[in-house]
Amino acid sequence: MNDNLTNKFKTLTIGTRVTAAQKKLYKETAEGLGMGFSEYLAEILQMYYDCYKTYGKPTPLETALEEENRSLKLELKNTKRNQQNDYECTQIFMKDRDKMSSELEMQKSITAIQKVQIEEQTQTIADQIQTIEALQAELLKKNKSFSFF
Image (tube, rainbow, N blue to C red; front, side, top):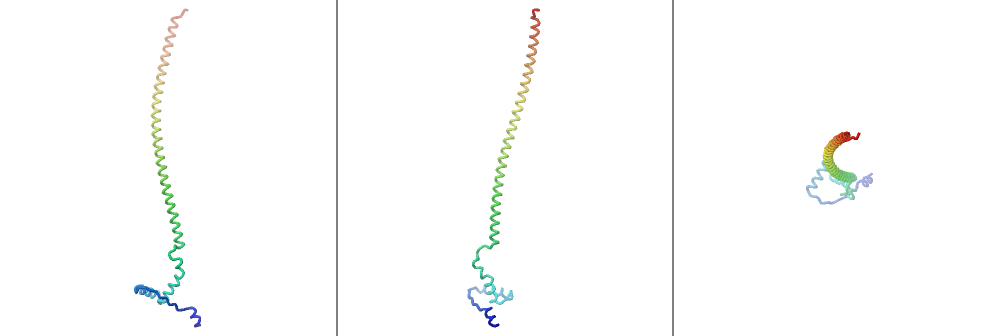
């Protein structure tokens, strides 16, 4: 049984340089957790023994969040571009509307002028018809008075 304990727990001596303040902090932390200083340091080593190869590399969650962030930035950029395009289209439509409105006003003015001209021409035609009728009546009277029979 003693052999089992020997195989289970081996003594490992590790030397490192730390400041007095760091050593005090580590000891206080170990005592706060109810552990001995050596046991605390052994647990720290056990927790982080395989982390050195991934140290400084992003975790899968960080990578996923970064990708989502990139995607959202791209979507925002596209949305801003679409808003700009919508604004430009709106400006074009407004200019076209204003142009069409002024053309419509011009067409209304032209139509009003044409209406007045048509009324004047209609009046002139009516006057000419009356003149022709009067001349025909006068000619008919002259023809009757010039009759050979």
